[in-house]
Image 1 (cartoon, rainbow, N blue to C red):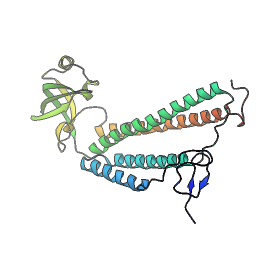
Image 2 (cartoon, helix red, strand yellow; image 1 turned 135 degrees about the horizontal axis):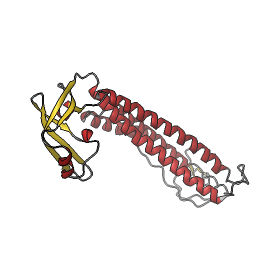
Image 3 (spheres, rainbow, N blue to C red; image 1 turned 90 degrees about the vertical axis):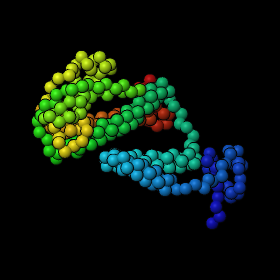
Image 4 (cartoon, rainbow, N blue to C red; image 1 turned 90 degrees about the horizontal axis):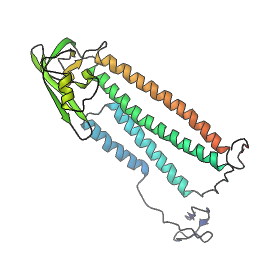
Length: 269
């Protein structure tokens, strides 16, 4: 069977594969591009991303998340290309333009909320999940951190507050923001809150390294606190996604009622 070209606008099939214009509607016809399969490109992207994340010791759930993100993005891209190549139907006549525009705006807002919830909810969950498994099973005991000197560093978009001191006679380092409950914006604020000689109750993890060895004492150890936080963030994200998803379906249905010939509701104005 000889290959044919199809006009993307009217759908006319052209036996002449060299044609650059539709004889029926005069729509320009671009030559078919010979490109690598999109799924091969997606596999290459995932391989590069996974290699990078493994080298820098990203948590495995984050690698899975980025893999799913690439998979969904590739599927949507392929769907969009197929839709663009198909004959375009005549746009329906809008019977109620004002509510149609309002519903379209609300649908866009819901879509943005869905995207933001998936993005930021995943990041927050993975941070708590990583911290949970970082401290899970690690030996620790109750101790005191005596502050020797505090440090404040200001970066372009963030700050860092920490201290050097002693735990059981050994020199250790400790992040101060969990102890303060906020991020100081100036060195003077940090000096006023934490002075040399201050004793801070902590959990001490002798098998860990750096600041991770010293964690502020709370009612629950870091592993349990992080586990509860991860489950809370997951549940909240799922509730938001469910509520916004239902709202989105209702808005799409209401917008359809504003289109002539599709069950237009005269009560909507």
